[in-house]
Amino acid sequence: MSTHTPAPRPRRVRKEPDERRDQILACARALFSRRPYATVSNTEIAAAAGVSRGLLNHYFGTKRDLYLAAVAEMMSVPPLPVPASLADAGVRERVTQSINAWLELLERNRETWIAALDMSTSGGDVELDLILDEARDRAVHHMTEVVGLTALSHEHGEVRSAFRAYSGFAETTTREWLKQGRLTRSQVHLLLEEVLLNLIEEIVPRLVETAQARQG
Image (cartoon, rainbow, N blue to C red; front, side):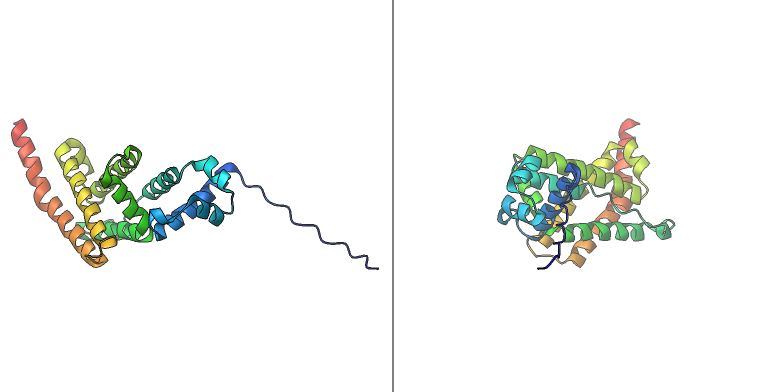
């Protein structure tokens, strides 16, 4: 008779709540980024994360709540800093680097971005609007930092508003690319770069001039 003793089963590692939540969110982001929002279910996300549907609901509640968390995480990714090698580069080169990084982020999260824009433009989703509005503020701060206009944007609200308007243009342009397919990524980059440079070189000085004339 064999005296072989079966090897003990490996103990299941119990994940901490934050780690489990992050795992669910990572799986949700991966699914939302590849497929339209309506085609992804909480059951599918739970299976991908290796958790029960009940545990997923415990952390996030509804699919909408989980989607909002995924959008918030995507939009909270800090913008890539302009490399030290470009510190003394011209404005165009710095703008090119910044736009490339942003378009790369959107392309990796295509469906999540499209769904966020669609839900926002349909109106009525206050929480999503707040997430996107905060992201626009961060984007404006980053843009003015890249082109050296942060101090001027704080001094003149008109300058900051102009960059906010540009961010709306950028959202519409990326929709034409990622959802409608009427523009290529290179065409989107061209539009965003040239419009931003025109804003910096032509429009901002005139806005400041009119503001100073009004004050004087």
